[in-house]
Image (cartoon, rainbow, N blue to C red; front, top):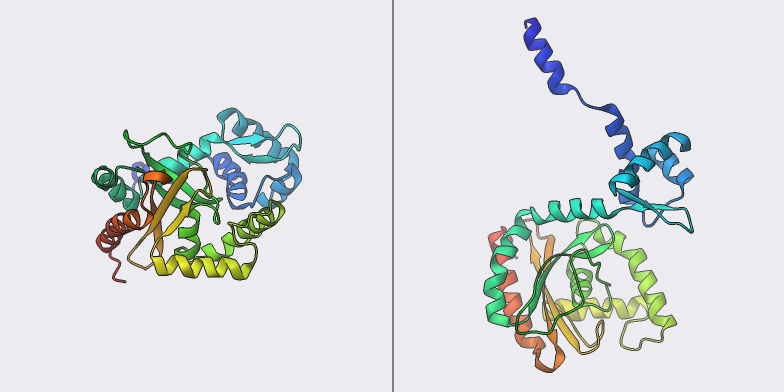
Length: 268
């Protein structure tokens, strides 16, 4: 190997070590269940608090990290959300589903959305609003609750593969506690009731709610599976309860989701 070849090979392997070191902080925040204090974040990333702080100052300027003014805890910033949504939108399953939503919109006449499991739960990654339906106050990046949304119930029932069941544990505990505190009789308030809801959802083939998450709004969410039988995403249809037929929408959205699953290699 001559000198020129060696030089080219070294350049190909070269990188900026400080970028790799700093990314450890973002990696820790991505895996954390919530915002972290500087000392805890630094310790988890294997660096001193002073060193971590220097990186975090730059990350804040870039919008990759935000710091709560009251608690002083750090959390991922809006720039990471944009990057994450951009990445998720490039996943084949999401791309295939996006291409089919206009046809589904014509068939349903209702607002449609796609959701995947993100760091904090079921996350809206694509939105297609119907011109014939009133605007619904949900947007890209919104994380849907597991118990009170059609999307959440769909992931709760069908998305337990790939370690999601473990991740949903803290989310479920918090939502059950909130349902108890608010005396929400329309939501399950015990693990047994949650399990019964999951069984009911699997039997229907899709998650659904009527006037639960948003007053006057109903929705259904059907699962899309990949070749390994894992839930890749959920297809959501929602509209005004007075004109929204849950069973009809469930059949229509479910048919599209099953076809998409088959095209992804699912043979269930």
